Image (cartoon, rainbow, N blue to C red):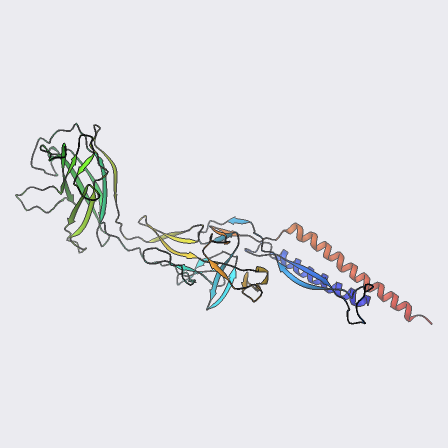
Length: 422
């Protein structure tokens, strides 16, 4: 029996050495998970039953299990590289064949799909035209490279402080080219439906006769690219777009819109863009205090078209495109998968695993949800192989191999002694 026991020991030790060698060979493989060899003994229960005196007939490899412990996260500087900090796998698609990986070295192919080195497509949730993530069945993520369409300005918020000690302009009527006809001015860039920019200039002139309940009022004028709004036909004078009224506390009390301080204007455009362009100007944050004129807020919601200039990926896996016009937009979201028993996954090579009956069905969700880990952009997860441990294990496996070989050698000597009996 010692021949069989020793032979089983040699086979088991050889399998262990193969596993250790594979671990060492992949010590620098991104996303690699180390394996270890598990053994069990063999009992000859068929030989008149196995009793308490049975010595067994050797060992066998019962399982080669993988360790899915976290590897070190290493920064790469590539915005498309991703590491999973925690549990989960990237869900990949190769012509309908679904696999799973921890290797987050991704790139864009010629069609704009996010893929790995083998061409497997990363799957996730797509974004609607307004950037809202639609969490449906995961599909391959394709990054749109088209220009971001322009958005025309339809709202502008103007917050100014008008000096309560100002005097009525000495010259009338209002003329944007004559600073003696107004007290203060400011300007903001607005955009039309084609993404063209226009300079909208606002002028404030103290009114000599305020209307109750205001104790002071300011006529507000508007020009766009130097043209008065509303349009003026000479020799008529420009008319204000509205009047801002303030009470004795310097608080805006008119126009009495909801919310207060809103003035609607229409811009007549002649460059082929949508005309007239309606813009609501909100002066609700404006004040009249005893301090010099100042602009505290001046924002509008339009922008010109922009080219895609880069990406960022959040911890929740949302891929956000950054555009040359300073805007950003959600382009998609990475989906992660986890399993009831990751040890049951079938290893497919190329850092890919396949779902199996033992692993259970994939549990898919957004990064950071449930027990799924978070995404770290611009980094990858290194191999979890501990070289020191593997080298020590190799020495142990080598000794086991030598010891089993010695068992066979000893059995051979005993057998030879029996054969030589006369």
